[in-house]
Amino acid sequence: MAVKFYKCEQQVPLEMHKVRMIQKLSLLPVEERLKKIQEAGNNTFLLQNKDIYLDMLTDSGVNGMSDLQFAAMMQADDSYAGSETFNRVKAAVKDVFGCENVLPAHQGRACENILAEAYVKPGMVALMNFHFTTTKAHITRCGGSVEELVDPKGLLPQSDDPFKGNFNLANLSQRIDELGSDKVAFVRVEAGTNLIGGQPVSLENMLAVTDICHDKGVKSVLDASLLQDNIYFMKTREARCKFMDVKEIYHLLADHFDIIYFSARKLSFSKGGIICSKNPTYTRQMMEFIPLYEGFLTYGGIDVRTMEAMAQGLYESLDMEYLDQGPEFINYLAKELSDYGVPVILPAGGLGCHLDCQAFVPDMPHDQYPAGAVAAAIYIAGGIRPMERGSLSEQREPDGTERFAELELARLAVPRRVYTLSQLKYVADRIKWLWDNRSLIGGLKWVEEPSVLRFFFGRLKEIGYWQEELAAKFRQDFGDSL
Image (cartoon, rainbow, N blue to C red; front, top):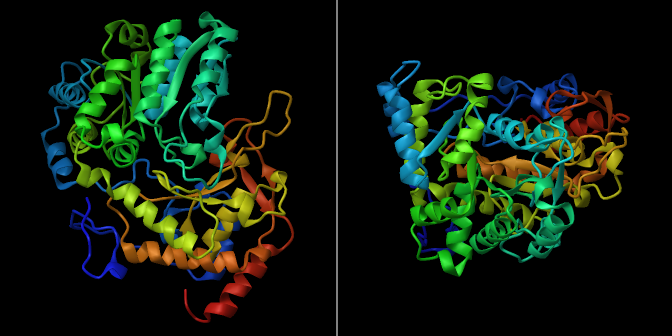
């Protein structure tokens, strides 16, 4: 929502909501932060929430719910089958997407498991603009492989391109021809490509992808988990969308994509997951896997109170005054950091502000995990928990060699309706201090490395004693301050 301040130097994002519930936070002294990150094996996933001041690991399942969502939870119908709660979820999905065929799952990665079980056979390939960690893991577990066809401009850390998540359409068409349509499990478009900085995909590009798929007889799948942010960027950056209603964009996408799935931990600010389609053939093909892996078809492993919050949250996802909160706060943080000279991904995408760690510690080799090292250093510097989105988030090749990420990013997610502007300014201040002391940051090496999804629970150790030196420099510069 565009609200101009009379004094232009005071211009900041303006919330269109008020806070009615709070949660107390704690900020540990820097010496304690040093101890906690080392106990966690330099993996921010293994930090305990009680030891964190600002949790910017993710926006998944940690967004602030509205008063109407909490109220909706009180009408939940806790029956195993024939639940009115599921009927209300179906009605919300139909209203928002226009899809009558709906399958519930307990979260987004569960939807990915169902898709992989139904459509991925050994030797098949899933084509996508960019992979996501769990998506790729499910596909490779079923014997398939993933190929990324994002336009090369999407891998540039800084540019003026508004839609860096777009498919390279020529490459997509060519690759389907080379593989043969029977070898393509599906083409997946990820709205708000997570691993390259939450970068959006244009409506024009999405529809062009579905046209290619329909022409060549290949299934088109939309991961709509970050669609709220993506639609904000469509509305503000794409001329065609400027005067379209939000619901009109949702419906147009559902008209063209064969299958849509999403994590309600992101889309709708609740929890759970949904697979939907306008074509009942697809949901029938996937239906048998829901009772096997999730639960009955009317709840799919989701608590019914959560389902009521999901239904209300889907309606709220049509409201631009809710949609703009994430992208505008993220852009504010990215601009603050960029003005300080800190290298960030530009233009700012959705989900969070992303630090370009290859530029942050340019002399650090990939096999010392620069994004993981910077993420650990951010916690030491400010009690802020980011997420590593670089080579640690990849998985090794079948022969055991390391696959290095195209971008080494540390993500500062901005949960919706949670943090205040002063807290974001604190984040910018502490990262500016870290940037000025970046020469102290050293690398990491594995201590415990799981074979799958290692970034969730693997452990690393600092190389040398750079973390102790960083904590000592903090105490020298800040004195008694936390």
